[in-house]
Image (tube, rainbow, N blue to C red; front, top):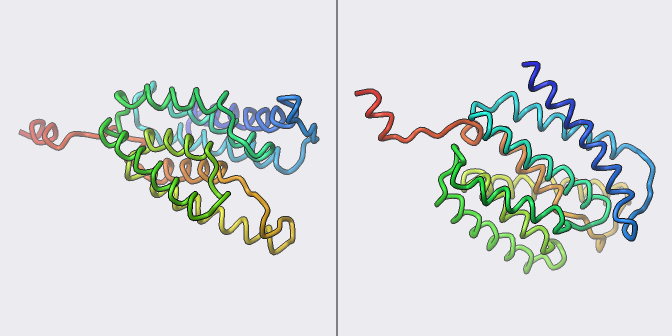
Length: 222
C-alpha cells in the first residue's frame, strides 16, 4: 500500500463527491438541486477505492497507468450523471471515446486488433440485447461499451458486461422488493457497465500488466 496509491485514492474520492454534486446542479435545465446524501458518499468511496486499486495493482508503465486513471475520471463523471439525470452526455462520452481510441496502439496489455474486433463485437452484443429488452439499453450505453471494449479487449469486456448484467439484476430486484421502483421503471445501465468494467480491470491481472510476446520470451531465454 504505497503512498502514491493512497494519495490517488484520496484524490479520486474527492473527485467522486465533486462529480455527484456537479450532476445535481448542472446543466441547469436538468438539475434537481438535490442536497448531498448517501449516493454522494457511496460514489466518493467507490471512486477512491477503484483508483487506489488501479494505482496499487498496476505494473504497467507510469503513462499507461495514468491513462487508465484519466479514463476512470471520465467514467466517474458519467456514472454520476447517469444516476442523477438518466443520460450519458456526449460532452463526457466523446472525450472517453477519443481517449480509448488514442490508447489502442499504445496499450501494453491489449493488442490493437483485439481491441477493435472486440469493440465491434461488444457493440453488436449489447445492441442485440437492447432489441430484446426494449428500453433496457440506451444509445449512450452502446457508445460506452464500444469505448470500454477498446480498453479491455475480449478477455475483459464480455466479463464486464456479464458482471454488469448480474449487478443490474440484483439491484433491480432489491429495489422492487423495497418498492423503490416499479416493473416499468427505467434503471440506467451505464453505472453497472462502469462498475463491471472497473471490477474486471482490477480482477484480471493481465489488464494491468504489460503483455510479453511469446516469441520474445523464447528469444530472451535463449
